Length: 222
Ligand code: MG
Ligand code: ZN
Image (cartoon, rainbow, N blue to C red; front, side, top):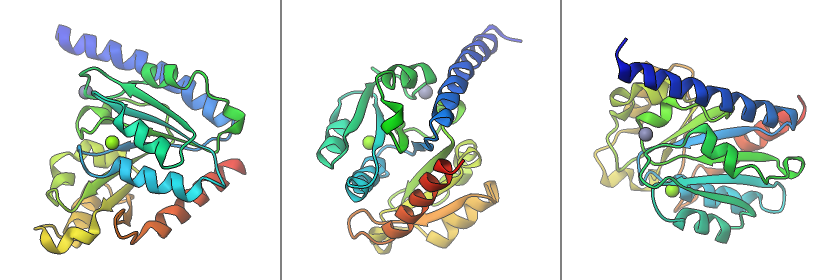
């Protein structure tokens, strides 16, 4: 085994230990969680803004927002009505790891949280290797990208449970086929649940909210 592989294995097993602690803590408090992943600019923050605004009188949603630099996204989420928002500035690191998430959720009052969301750094490669203790991964892809991304980044689509196709209002201006991206994604992962949204027009958001509602309620009942 090369030294590089040995070091990577060690880092990942340390990460997995912390992720398991996070997962146990969230489960103990019946808090569902997901890790949002995508390329930069697919609309993770926009979808979260809509989601926070929609549920602000009903649920306490805690968000950890990762970015390479700036706390801009965390500030947007606060403005949208988010109350429990923690920025993580990774200072150049291209993914979040479990220790960053653990640190940023240290002061959370878990009894008061209904849903925990991690907005990962925009990157479809290494965030797929880092378990952050979440229940599931939600991968976003927007119509301004290539509809072959599931084939180019299969690891991420294989490990995700949900795919959100965002910016559907722009599809007529782009060389992007919604049926094709769904076919490509299902070729990699036949179980992937698919939503189609436009954060600008609001199209499809109700289905996304319904799914979140069910996620929250089913975890509460566990
Ligand atoms: Mg963002
Ligand atoms: Zn990385």
